[in-house]
Length: 274
Image: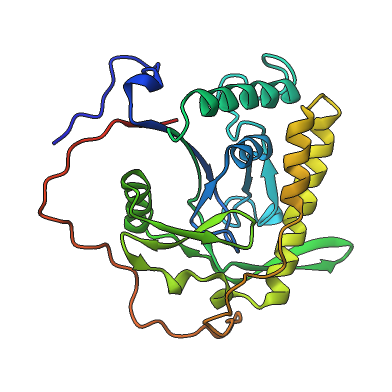
């Protein structure tokens, strides 16, 4: 057993550790991969957009709709607009902190985005008596806990594989040497469906960015956001799976299983999560 407690809530300086990972958590149930590797600028945008989704189980009327809070969590001190300055000031300050760390400690600062929801959900919205009614057509396929644990473990060890994905970021394609074809987005949706989800997501991100820009955002952040809005329509590699529908999905040979742990002892590292 290795103790993971720390003597203080403050992290030690980067000069005394192997590195630091800024990990952003979101819950999306449609096309977002379970893990994305971000550039520093994309990490700032993740902090800016602070996005997740309403759950169908907890709020059927808003199920599938995005909810965005700068800083990602209303329970974090300073995450709400009325505490410690405007949202724009918070994002600008985060940008300054991140860029200074990256400049002073090259190779020691990394940024990740984890989707703890799942993939494959389809919700249809119809009009009934002048009101929008939502119907769950296909349930989300949740990310297995052992898979998410393996993803984060592999990111710390540097054993996962990432390739450029539909979000313009690097999306995970293999965990601990094991490819993840069963979680290829094209297994769940047609290209038209993927494009529609991307369009909806970009529109929401753009609207929030314009709203917070009115409070004051650095030009560098606005340029990074505009670049992120130009998401490529399709992946470069050809689709492997025939896209499934609400009634039919391609059968899988076997669910994901964690790799067998190596018997070789590992030296405990000093990567820190933030």
